[in-house]
Length: 218
Image (cartoon, rainbow, N blue to C red; front, side):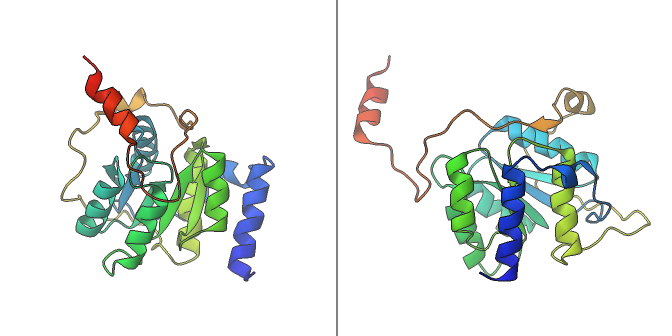
């Protein structure tokens, strides 16, 4: 096992044991104001909460609710960082990660995988597929800033300077922007979704029985 893998493995077990001491202190090193960050999650709640956290620290936020949209946005908008959920219907996070890493346009973008599913968490540490880090649900603002700060310190993201930078506006943000009033109603902790039973190994096709039942409704 190389040093990088060992370091990540130790961090994983510390988090499993509930050692969140380092997460409660905000890391000062952050990425420049206005850089684009892509949030990929099929849960609108997680997208809203994580988007709020990122905006509050001066980042521009792109959102995608499925794997296909995530790949298209990553190619067209070239975000500085991607937060990618593992368990999603259709194209799961591992498949998206593989596609992004094999594409010359997106292969160098830092990617932080996120999940609240124990099976997905375990599988991530067995089959990393080139992800930079992992963030387990539930997570709070300090945990998000910690992940970004570590990527800055490792050189995967540029560092924020003392003087404010001109904010870069993405060409295509989410269709419906949240107002400041809306943001105050969004919680500060992203909780995991309900238990999921989606297949993680490959995109799944709905079985014929499900299609027949759906056809018979109404």
